[in-house]
Length: 266
Image: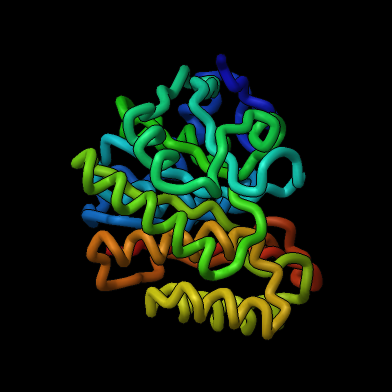
């Protein structure tokens, strides 16, 4: 099965040459590389958040496998849904890391393979051209994440980290997330600072708590929490903020903005 691109022409250029040109302007070519265990990157249209995502992908060492956790905005399919399909973008196909995926699925009953959860969801798809641009031969393990309690998130993180270790994968864990949505810039910045601080501290449970307590509309909170937990089990010690901006920088309207943060965990 092939999961065709569904947001080409909306979130990014639909043709190969246009997309390559777009990525060339977004990914810094000679940045000092970080050996990342995890990253948090936004998933809005490239004109809004692509510079932040590109700054992160341009700063990390290419890996052989990218385990991508994305929120399920549509609510379709299983609560935690993997995909063993090929994924298509204008730059070509990305192969699934089937060995790693099967190892993960053998360790937890919480994740099931379910194409419905991925069929029209953009949060994972928009990461793929960046991966193709910076790690052309990489394989992927896409996991759409819905709601869950801390115990469930910890179980998934344990399954992923243990599978990465057992298969000796040179992997990076990707959390796809935008930050606070559609509030004025001052409110967005203040809320996002609280969430960003928890990511810097590698505090997954604290992130979930601060998002809930402060009504922070961070759509990828659950994916980011799983990433932080799994990266911690793989030895992560440090979080760093690479870049932050909001949609008002593009639209000029700061009364209703969305925040975008790019972060690396190593």
